[in-house]
Image (cartoon, rainbow, N blue to C red; front, side, top):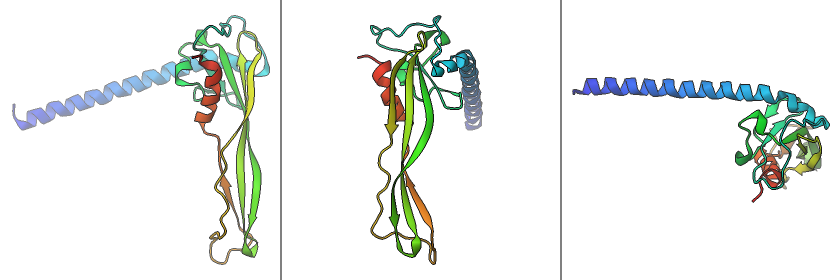
Length: 187
């Protein structure tokens, strides 16, 4: 085979690979939307409503599948540890309900010309429910790490007066997943 033929075959194989990856991505999105549709009715668990037709939280099980709901009612899979991610609506045992995130002002640092730095931490209330009974399994207020500290000398734009900068820290999804893992995965 000559070089042009080989390059043509390689190009076709690359295009075929892209088509397969695209098809897999579309299939995955369709399945995820189907699963979200099936789980949407579980949002009321965040208000203590039980769904007796779902599996009970069994302490003898090693894995307890989890689905999450954000404050706006949207479904999230981000807070479930990998081992406890939901693959079917029928397998879900636990629901994590995430409340509004709150920023807490922890310090205001004052500099010349009335310039300031405000330091904020974040708090997040999370509640874990058993679907079958609607009972609370656990609840906690998660707190972010400390934001950057104020410096002795801070740079502000030349000539600025009464300017405020903010240093913030937030709660990463991994922190929520670690908390959920204590209840969703038994070693």
